[in-house]
Image (tube, rainbow, N blue to C red; front, top):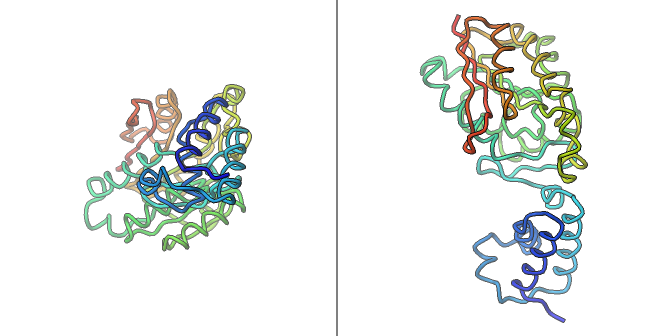
Length: 289
């Protein structure tokens, strides 16, 4: 018995929606198994799928409906126009984080000036899959970019991503900025997308996030601010003046993170920036003196 593309998509979309997952996952999985891009898939709706493809596709749809992230099934996710390897050891890239990268790149020339911008050292703390560090290096190649993570497994993923995408990064294994402090490193920009979900939110999260993504990359104490507190205290040991700090935050955390930064840097110009969905997403601090 043969199955046409549109028949496979219709079944998979309905099955996923019945299990409260997005129908779009069906398209991603069928593209993965056929090797087709979205346009090709949509022009081949009447094409017949061979038995092997259907069996693999069906098995993966069942995995997705059971809560396994589609990115863990396909092994990759796109970020800032590039494909990254992802697995259970790293946080799956979110599109909101692209706005953090965009804001940094947009601010560099105006804040540092042309001469200084050509010789920047940037640190990405808690790099995970390396999406922020790799994107910044490839988009601002004249800078030196350092990436740290406490997880050896995460660093292995980040190193592979950087290598495959041609980004020359320096990696440090350790807790937040500690390995850079020990190495005597200094930087003009420190960026981080740390864990910021309060423990109390765990029960309300979907299984495909809380049961499959690394806990250490998601949760940060009772109020979600534990990592910010620790990281901000380390900043003066690494951040040069003038310097810039860029954090991704959870919605509603802007004023709290701004206050934490103001305590350490009273003279800093700090702004809370909303994302495309009008949710608080970025805290940007400019330290001039």
